[in-house]
Image (cartoon, rainbow over all chains, first blue to last red; front, side):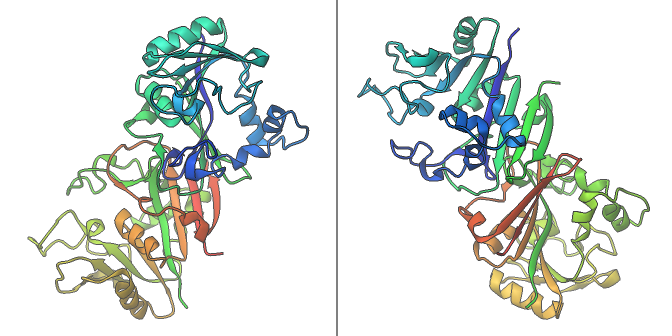
Length: 214
Length: 214
């Protein structure tokens, strides 16, 4: 059976996976780039941008696993874009340009379905008003033998964790206090009891945590 | 000028410094001993109990700093005991037996002052209805040239951080999700900007963070 995985999901010390006030100019609201600066220096990130160079240390080793063996992603609508409610503008096709970084089918959870959008490079956005279980069924079908990634944001990961659908969770604790935004851990009391957990701090100062089923 | 320090303060991944439902039997409520199990194996802790042995690795090195150069502690009333409101029982002299681990004056913040209690081994509990600034003045006077420790619980440390009175903060992030209790980080947005922060994970799986003034 293919696995359901989360990678590179950054949270602040106070558990926020994104800041307050998402907008076109600020995908992570007032958090700005602070949750992800550990990632920007990695070779993996630079390759996503079509650039050379970058660090190949432990942050990169962790970051790299994001795409390995993944056949589909499920994301929440707030990861896809800043619009809420009925789509005012179907021209919006995400933050990632004409050739998004996913290169697989991507299932966007929304109460307002719209036609699928085929992008360059293998990414197709599907829009589905589904429970986590049903969305996972759709994504698994699209992924074939490969794994499914739950891409965020916080409430999407939280919903899948609450439904005990996630097999591998990689969280990056960034030593900042955001104070507001959307929390990852709410409603997940005792989550640690379901997983084997490893922690390690990288030279960039973030702490990588991996949750694996025992 | 003497420093104001916090040591060995454990929080869960979701930022709780203590669980819900404190009682005589459960000083940390439903958290039980989970926030502090990293500490129990250390030589420092075993010495506090008058026992020999214990680990002398990095958890112990961090734990040991708790008493070095400290001349007084300030603690919140909920750290002192489970009673709330007017004292029903002045026979309560804390969780720590006749010879408490502090061996210095300890200032207990409470809206219900009561006479000081002289314990064995150098610990005296004073009870004071004071602002953080005023309590610190009292503790500094008692500490002489030595430093003052802010002992917790979460709301006491939070109040002193909010008032920017803390010079050195050592927090231990334990990879558990408590779900409820009292949070350390609330209302402290941007705290990280006031400190130089170091993080490292120990073999016990906890992450030590030190916040030092730049």
